[in-house]
Image 1 (cartoon, rainbow, N blue to C red):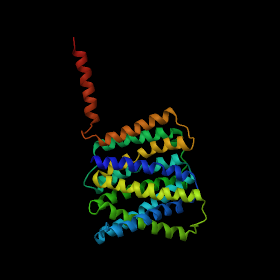
Image 2: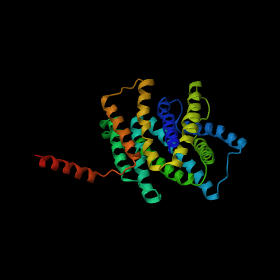
Image 3: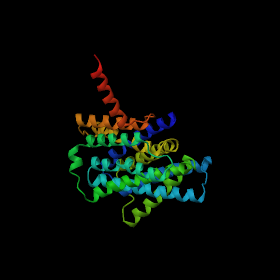
Image 4: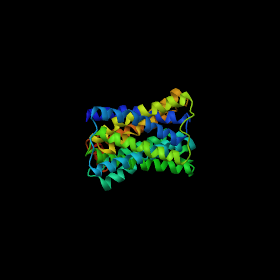
Length: 304
């Protein structure tokens, strides 16, 4: 479990730079998603074939892994578009509502049902997320295409997390990642071709950013996160991924000169505190907490 938690933390750090790179707007959202997957595929595919690390799963698991890759590729593409068409804060908040969808999905479809700590921690973490991006941003959402894409991204993300959890119970991380990322690249390549997006003609900086997205934000990050997903509850992993918002905010402050306010700091605290509660082993009970507080007051009044 310790290794899984370390892998999750490092994976979150790796994906936290992604919104900053997308905000540079050097390529279209769909082609950015394609090259993120294609570059990762170009590295992992030769590696697994040469090292014999790839193990062909059963037909059912193979098809599910391919489906997972298509879903994840679509998630990245619509999130990219949501960021570019609105703001990174709005897109990030909507995408990171995925723990709610994961919790609901886990309740209906997984054996490991969400605990009460998960729901308490999720509520606190989402409150922290709202504080982080600002109540005005949350209240002034425009229900346009970008808004719908942001919500869709969160739902796709949740489906990916739940499906990948079941698959990773059956096959190893490397084999799953290989099938997933290659199927993502192929599906996104076909979509890019059909909508007439150019695959070339980018600046040197754009190619460098695409390389970082493929190697760090996709290959390294999701190998680590997939390892964590295999060894931890899907609900815990999904809530922990909210931590990327805090890191993304810090990176935006460092590299894009975006301001950090006291409200954002408080939001980050609540967000991380909510994540911590989901990892707390002893079950929390709000009812017991209230009863203990009342009992404590009664004891104080009875004292001479």
